Image (tube, rainbow, N blue to C red; front, top):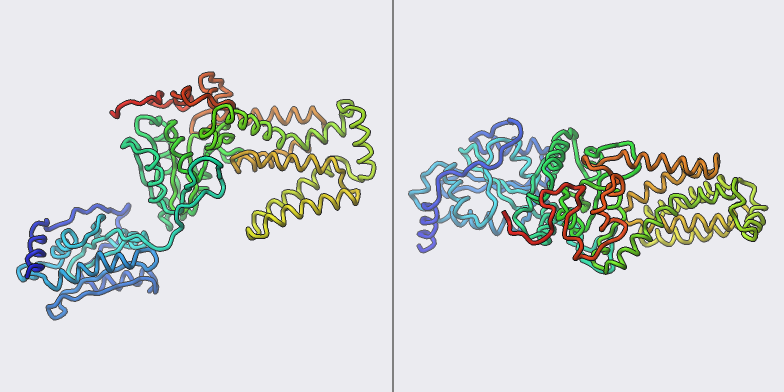
Length: 525
């Protein structure tokens, strides 16, 4: 009797209707008051899939009134459904007061959902399209015979990868947590870094068939409103059947398609994304991938690592200078060797020139063909090391490089100096923190090798001029790509090649035009 009176008081305190919160983008098929017809329509829409679970419940009135709980196995947490939905619902129906048992099913279902179920998210829909989308997003549905409305309850579950150390962007000193494939987890990881109500989120659903959740994250009052609006408009213009990874979004909304250089930055580290948000940038999170996009992205950003801000400024400056030197070695190393040994022998000291001539005396190919064979071979080994299983991939790439290089030198196909040049070039390309920037360098290297083989240093200089001209013409969401190098911004040089001490970084980058350029502590507006 005590439980009977408690349920009665809870039901009387609740309102008779739920406020609809989930509306479909387009008008779809409306649900009918017939429970059996609705369940058959759901089964038909899903092709009678075996993972669609439908649990029918009958009231103790001879089976004239029925309820149904529907969910997709693997996308929802079955234990939570049993504990937070089925158990309370069955208990409440069993001890339902007589004066409430006569209510229509629609009102009774709403009262039970609002008062008995110990869950947080409750939505109401009346059409088939949002119902199916809710089920496929991990929600559980409660339907009642005689009601054309369905209650959706957030019960997302299933197996997923937990928070682990990032595999592509490791650091010696710094946080070890990385993003996962779950969007809600990724949002929480960023919010743990920035505990401020001005961190705003906007959600989009993109993909006609995948309905992928895309979240735009920015600091209100810091990020530039024009850039935020540009991100919104580009996302809204996407028309595609599916989004499976953030690379889809990157390619669909970037400023220019035909460029080897990346114009959007991605990271799997929450601290890197949080630092970008604090500077006035905008993050784009995609459900199903641990890589988060950050815009605007400029050329110097791809040579900065998270660890630069966890070490002293002098150490960070030294490492950044080393990365820029590595960039030029990876870009110009083989072409410089080809140009000097083919056209400009006078630039070499006589002892070194004699040694190179002696080595190349047995090589039947010109320097360009020699370098091309070695570079292509190394690219094949690198790609094989990435695609092979992790246990053997690294061993194959290292042993293959050593064996092939040594055998080629002994056979007289390749000179020893060329092996050294290609090895140094390859090592230098790995120093660049951003993998996509390293790919751009590897692609441009072959073009510069051809120019060096044809015109010597003059061809290299022309190639560099064309690359610089192309870089200066790029933009990332309206911001010049080479800022603060071109156009020059002296105030922003404190965090490009050299990093000033943290006490000297109390102003945000001017090229982002942040609404709040001062990093000092200010009370929220």
